[in-house]
Image (cartoon, rainbow, N blue to C red; front, side, top):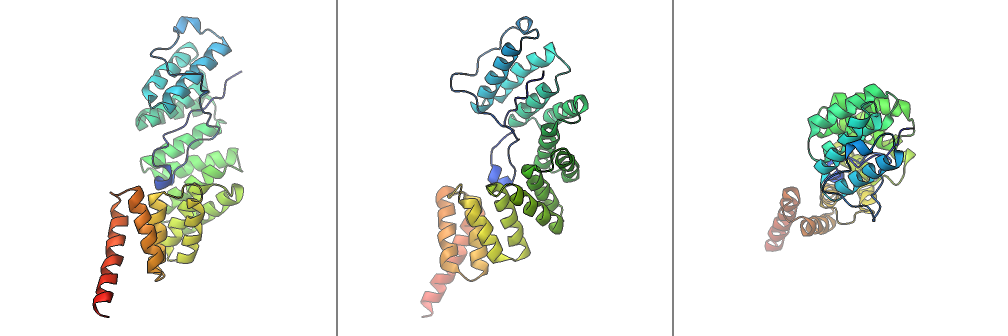
Length: 275
């Protein structure tokens, strides 16, 4: 029996990018640490306990910022059993966490070839395609993931992002609505839909969604900046200025927040001089 033990695809800037981590992400247990080297390959055999130990060590490596060590560990599992689709899935996730997107795509593709019903592989490959801006390929993979798992909220949300990047706003909005209906706590999707509403000029709806997204991460500078832009568009300059200021407190180098803050403060100074 194959051990389904997935590792988190790179989670850096998830909310800013509108991307989410793979399903069934399991944190490494506190007692497991990332080793300098894995157990000798000859000790693996078909011992499921030892294989699970390698998976747990690999998770600890990814969580500890050492994804390439995780790649090395999972490669031992693949060497002992080249037909293990889940091992390729996990190694692909570790490769993506290391920024090796081409290698990640290769591993996800092998996983899909070995097990076409492995929904996480379709989802992870779609997410990786999104990272490298191959949006048509991403949409195809997310669509297959949804076919295999119709209630897959994350796949709907990321397909919505890919559609939005291609200017297919109606399709994107449908995907976001379905994703949020499937999982009302999916803050990343509220961020994505709020960003789309901002683009479409539906500023009150944008504010509502971005406020929902900020419920989980109240200091996220990207969500704060976009909500500020919606407030500004509605003429609610005081609230916009508060959000731009909070965004800069969280990320002083965020140019869009700096531009918005300077724009409103300059307008206020001009208005004060003419009173």
